[in-house]
Amino acid sequence: MYFQTFPYGMHPYLKCFFDALQLHGIRYESGKLFNNQILLNKELTGIHFHWIEYLWESSTIYGSIKSIVGIYSFLREAKKRGKFLIWTVHNHQKHNNPNFVDKIGFLLFAKKVDLIIAHSTWSKNYILKKFKPFAPVIIMYHGNFISYFQCNGDIYCLRNKYSLKPDLPVCGLIGTIRPYRGHDIAIETMKYLDNIQLFIVGSSYSNEYLSFLIQESKKYKNIVILPKRLSDDEYAEVIKLCDLILLPYKNFTTSGALMASWSLGRSVVCSDHPYFKELIPSTSKAGKVVELNPKFIADAVLDLLSISPEERYDDSFSEAKKYDWNIVVLPVVEAFKSYFYGI
Image (tube, rainbow, N blue to C red; front, side, top):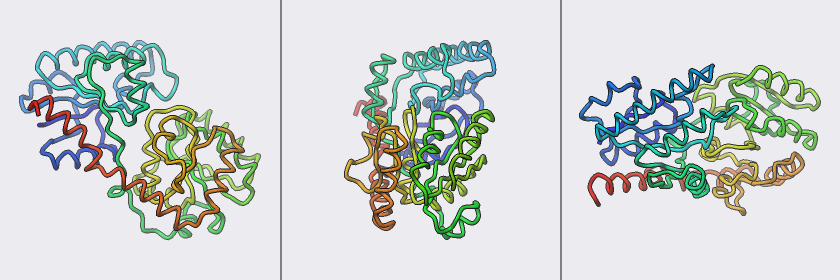
């Protein structure tokens, strides 16, 4: 079996996913040319879509609609040529300012693909209720990044590198600086955390939002904001230099940041989003799920920091190991066997 993925790109998630399926004789590549020409390839078993919202992203509504029309034509031609179509639902909607075109796009894929992959029971139930897909929906939990993100740097040296105080605990909010991630709530949390640093780092989605956060951060001490696109190595570095990772997300579907944090042995404090509630054990030292309230988040931070770093590391790393890619991909492998071989 041979599949191409779209949109084009090699996210760490895809690298791990490809490698795990290769062990089962299933070959994956990131597709480059998204047009009907690739459907002429007789070796191509199918197309696997991830982060579909980027396929019709445009600066204008007209541009997005035009792309949707092209996507519909592509999917119809793919079906005609017997290609197997898969959609992994990373997000239930576009992160920023979703509109009616985005809704049409998500519904289009729900009706046209042959298999849908969700990353949690909550997500599967949402997809079934909201999108009413024609295809079966299976659960493949998000795998860890133990083999991908590694960092051997000294924590104190790393903190110096990123202009942080070496001896004060660090809470990190890492990744693209977008409103849904709750940076404003993390900043407000700092009024309850005198001797703890907050490190916000990632590429900036909006200069206006970034300016707002910088202005808000001036109300409190020990906040460092670094608007920088991180390489994979830098991403691992900034997770490792933190004591805890904050995930006060307001809305999303799946969090790769959770698995990245656990894979590097870092406990998390998360909003009470259904995904977090499903994955984080209530008694674990690997994380706490709390109401999206600065005081509650601060209390959770202090509770976790009262636990030794070694215990937090062990629990977090143990949680990550539960999501070995060679295990989490098995539902996908079984779905392929059932569809193609009737096994």
